[in-house]
Length: 181
Image 1 (spheres, rainbow, N blue to C red):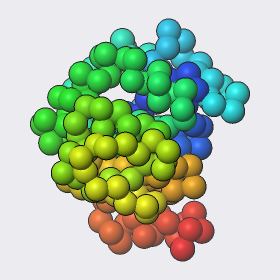
Image 2 (cartoon, rainbow, N blue to C red; image 1 turned 60 degrees about the vertical axis):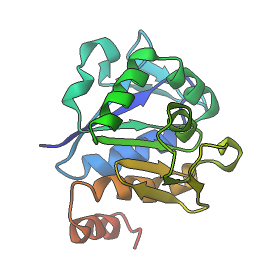
Image 3 (cartoon, one colour; image 1 turned 30 degrees about the horizontal axis):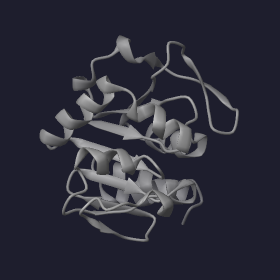
Image 4 (cartoon, helix red, strand yellow; image 1 turned 120 degrees about the vertical axis):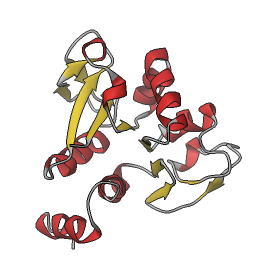
């Protein structure tokens, strides 16, 4: 079975995290919510506390097929401070495993050099000179890198992740079941 990890850091954007988790959990693709704090409870950018499945030191990130970063300005800053996570992202990227980020979080990929010569999107004010091609669309998949523009693009972002594991027909059925189509 394929398995994804999504990382919750203080100040994460809750819709970007939870809609992604919800959509993936509606399939047989697994996803774990991993706290980057010393508590299972992580507070979002809008003061919503979510209980993660695991703490970072309870899992081996090599066991995951995909690493997913929700945005949120403070959440992104806290994600980027985590050296364990950044090292895992680099390893996943170099092994051609899936790395995904939405909103402000693709800036981390830019700083790590993942966006060089890639098509990508992110929240517009977080676009910088990452030596790739910024696209003002909801979600972009370029090789093993998936990026999303922001909270309103979360369903399209999650769809791109699911398309790596499920057929287009299966993903369309899911979108119909949630009344997105």
